[in-house]
Length: 339
Image (cartoon, helix red, strand yellow):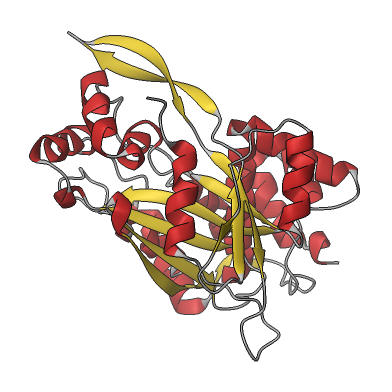
């Protein structure tokens, strides 16, 4: 069984502990192709899947509605099928030590075996989205949807607030980790000890890298971009993870009957093959700087849990792995701050 892959379990165990590793293995479906592994060596596919599992589990700790849903699926004997995880970045050269925009993540994704799968202009919200699919098993391995916000499309006061927020960003990847990523890109595998050391460092990249934002800057950002305001408090954590389901209409009926905070309506791509909806973002308490260095806490939108169904592309049995700009921009509204 793929779920018995020792490399995969041991990697996740090193990152989040044995109990939590067993739990996430119980909750998530493992893609095919993991039934064979090499003792002492970790393939790029194994490390990529381990990272996805750790990030999926991290989001469940921040999204109670998603955790409750996932546990219910497991209680019925099922497992969720992780379709993709999404994160937000800022393409801004005054970004401290962190590479601007998606460059901070392509340096991770490409050595792990991910390849650009589509580009999606999100012009209504001043962003560009890009999807990355895994070269070794694109139909089943979770994709990454990485969006970049373009501050130059907004006002000068907005741009100045962006600079004040992100210019303190640190780079969580030390030189040793970058060396291991280079070796992974070259060889397609790492010694287990190196892979186990690298995984927590990769996980650390999916976090907020800048200092506590000023409440005044947050207010400026929120006036023009809910997405940038969200980045100010949450950084580069997974904005959402996504369960791939067969019948999204039935899922919506079931979740609404349970009183879950569902998005109004299902987003349908122009092709008609991709259908998406989501829970509304959970509210989280975050710190802000105020006045002469004081700290205040405010409730703001956190992350959320999404659902997607995919139909086959024309003349092929394979699922359409694309995304839709209209769908994405509507789904992004799940993290809009209350006015």
